[in-house]
Image (cartoon, rainbow, N blue to C red; front, side, top):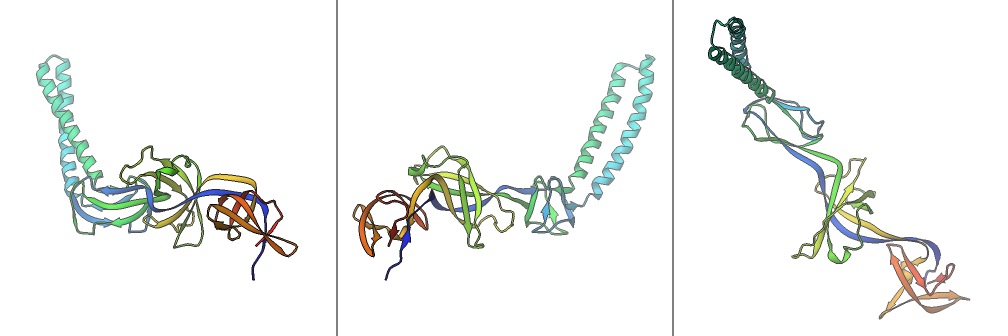
Length: 291
């Protein structure tokens, strides 16, 4: 028993298939800009945060007291500077005496601004928008300057990075469409080539291809292994038959064409193929019944 199909006119694409690991386009380790004890956590792992949002608060009581002391000193120096300004304008004090008071005032003013900046650093803020993928601190723990505290990952867009044999170099172009599939979902996700490395790795004979993937459903996650199909060419209005109908014998491709209940073996020239169909370049017309 056999099944038959009918050749028809359609469209078929040439695909390059490969596997890739999904990566985040933007990811940042949020470091502390000041030392201190963690007083409060504002977010947890899995929360979405926006650039500039406060993730945690450090103890700033000591810096606040230092600021109050320096502001009081600055006020006193400001009064001294105003009095010396009047005396200097009346030529009652020397320029050196006036400049010394002025320098003291400017130095204390800079010190006040520095202390205010340090107090602002007690609020740990994220530089990018995304999801908190890792929290590295706890309430009550001591945080040192430049210590990583959180990791924030932006899932939109995601990147799929694969390494392609150099023989495919001339087929792939920036912007070509692609489809992504992962084990976690039966759906396909649209993508396109965002970057092509201009060099070939001499050790592996491959070049790096980076695809941009958009996922509104939130199913895709960094680290997932994905099956990638890149469309690098499309043939329109060509004769297509079921892929299983073609028989390969040595270097020849043949199909069995049914005419008057008899199957005739016919040699054909094939072109592109996908999971379902294969293109017939010559040897078969549309509407033929094939085994």
